[in-house]
Length: 332
Image 1 (cartoon, rainbow, N blue to C red):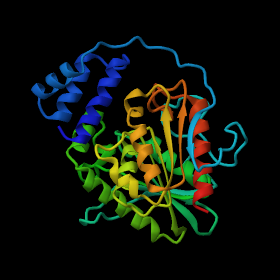
Image 2 (cartoon, rainbow, N blue to C red; image 1 turned 30 degrees about the horizontal axis):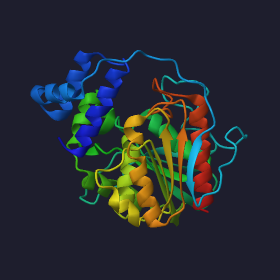
Image 3 (cartoon, rainbow, N blue to C red; image 1 turned 180 degrees about the vertical axis):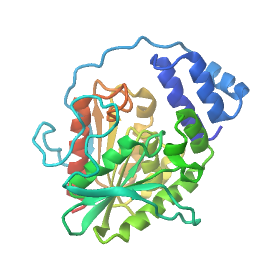
Image 4 (cartoon, rainbow, N blue to C red; image 1 turned 60 degrees about the horizontal axis):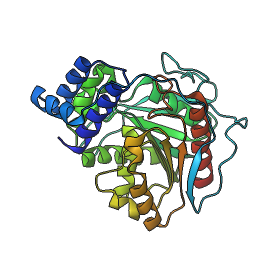
């Protein structure tokens, strides 16, 4: 079981513990990810426990913040001129239409370093100009309609954005619609190879006429948040990064050499991911960059995804405004 497979299996076990899936479905998913029923049985047995009672979300509160050399963020309740997460869960993941008059958006297929065609999505402000570029890294479900919507939201804030599907060679999320099958394909890829694909997307982004190649940032969610840490650890030339509840890499030492200013987004109730926060902070201190680690209380892992059960509109909006504010201050 490699690092990615372990994380993906733990994600599904967490869904089981929260009562979102049955034990039978947990076994099916973990079997696909780990490759055998015996491995799935051993993994589930090692985790132990039974489903927890489903609880109502706690009331929203202002985010608690661990800060080093960073200025406070703007009030999250202020009116903003760009798209933010919706006031309630969505069924299709769409809050900014592809034909929104503020932006130009659509599919796009950059090449990977090995020549493979990557399934991608791109959005830019409609007004002519050169804007900072943002790489958006998807969750463990791939380049879904929700992630495409996030790319469009970024564009409404006057950035040019791109996202790619890290299982492009197997058809991506459009083909692997069963999440467990998608995760099985994702788990077969090495972190190093996925970092190369994301770096190829960044290289492509820099060539676009609407992009200021000297001002590049990255954000990602859940699995994608972990990939942001991996990009930083690999020395990727980024000026700013905002990983959302991203798992800490097994070896986070590379983060200690990053040059990017980092805003880390954490969910207060996400004990699994939060257990690695101190290790990340130690590396950010070592790097000497401007950083801020925000813990948003009363919410769980994936609270920003408006298609999921953990979605919390108040805290998602706060975190998104903090994210855009971070990019505006560090990529201008």
